[in-house]
Length: 167
Image 1 (tube, rainbow, N blue to C red):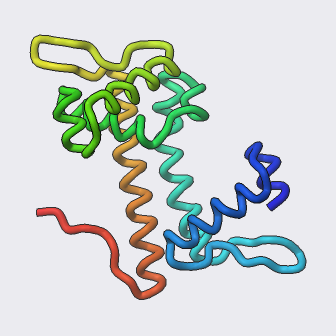
Image 2 (cartoon, rainbow, N blue to C red):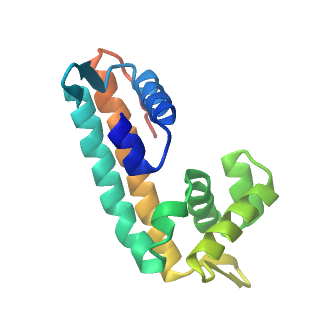
């Protein structure tokens, strides 16, 4: 835990709390502690594989915009980008996300600020994502799908069912 804390520039208690939250959300142990150290369980390895896949989708899109986004982009910002790209309108995007319109606008503005370039263009038909923003939104959608599949994989290991059926 100490090495993980140093590598992530977090305190050891913060790392411990984050892992506890992951395990609580997963409904199973992702790590096991021994006298020799902390090791991933089989469920932890399966989860790590899905997380690596998610970042393998996101990282090239981040790099295309700005490498800084790898460190600064938040889930809320990515969800806002996906929603605005699909709705082509801040108000409709906010309604889809169940948040206020200024919240979505602020998330996009912060993302654009970190990227150092506009991600959306105002047209007569609405807000249209730039090519790079479209690529990032698509990568984020696929990354979220990987994480949803990770939850389903972990639930299956513990005999639970999660997910959703879309018609």
